[in-house]
Every structure is written in C-alpha cells, then in structure tokens.
Length: 86
Image 1 (cartoon, rainbow, N blue to C red):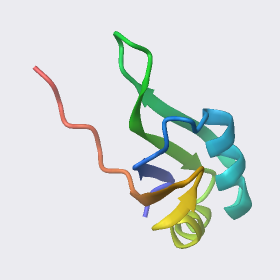
Image 2 (image 1 turned 90 degrees about the horizontal axis):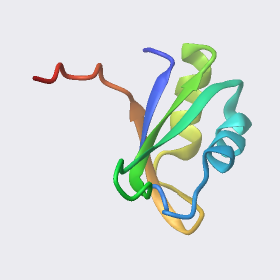
Image 3 (image 1 turned 60 degrees about the vertical axis):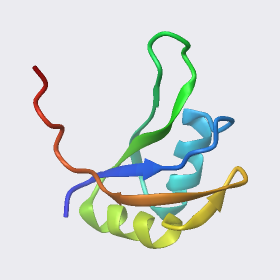
Image 4 (image 1 turned 60 degrees about the horizontal axis):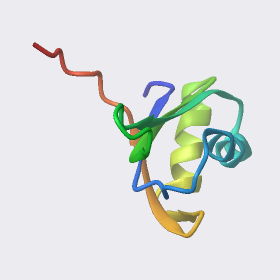
C-alpha cells in the first residue's frame, strides 16, 4: 500500500485545511489537495491526501471511508497512478 489516498464525494464547502485537519486524526498528513475546476475555481468534489507512512494511510482509510465530513459521506481509497494524457 502506498501513502497517497484518493478522497471522493467531498463537500464543496470543504477546504484543504479542513481535509488536512480531519485526516491528521489518523496520523501525519504530508499534503492535502482538493482538485478544482480551472475555469471556475470551484471544487470538483474530490482530492488527494498523502500520509507519511503506509500504515497511517491504512488507518486513514479505516477511519474515514464511508464516513461523514462536512455533511457529506466521503469515500477514501488508495490513489491509483495517474493515466498518461495525450
């Protein structure tokens, strides 16, 4: 298992700071990024959290997958490598 997690179904009101604070309950957060639309700057409803160790990443999945954050049930899994684009 890697250290990077995919977080889906994020509330539009959730901030990167809020995401980092939530996942810090499971361990040390290296980074937290919410993906936004280039044109509007609005959240696309998903993001990525990088934990410092695979064990902390596993703990974060157990703690947050299918749990409520800012009024929405989020889904957390290990991030897959990005597909190459043309």
